Image (cartoon, rainbow, N blue to C red; front, side):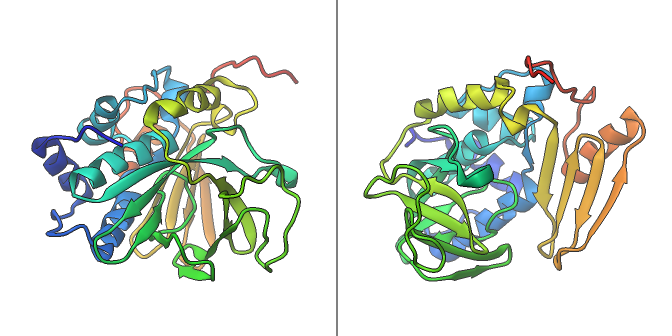
Length: 283
């Protein structure tokens, strides 16, 4: 999936994650890197609301995530993380997915980017550090039973088959498609055909510009905390979710408070508050 990132970039990325370079591309090392990424690199769409261009180029993604110490959404986070994993010796394949929305409707083609990662000791894993509230640890790609995770109970099943093993009617099903299910509800439909980063350009543009995209509606920034909780800043509302699911919320009243939350809780230093742009949405 990548021409490879150099040693300096690899070392800088690992320093950002607070991780040592693994001796071998093993399952255990992948699990640690996956969790550290979720704890350290926020899921955020701030570029959309800062008027910053989103470019799906490996070097640009690494510059943003590593050098600028920012986060991103799925194409950026999984694109950058896939490059790191490839540099560490993992066999990485980019996969396209369509996210389930209201009423079980599937989103646009190339709606989401996820990773299929092969290790030296444990087969293939589904890796996804770019979906927000999702699994904390990689899932066994070939396992069709329940997989327990700090984020909930997950299953990877043949597309169109629900958590009870019953085939449903959610859209057109290709023979090799898979559904990822979280706590009994389908999250996204995953294609197994390998993709390249450029394939997702139209999806990134749509999510950045369309009034129908939830990413264009409000700035959001979120990450996992130590112990499996989560913090999220959505617009001006700051939410702390404990590992048991209980929540505490407060509103940031001033721009200075918002900027301080980005800086102190997410490690993102901005000179202005992201503002929702007019995308032509009507009333």
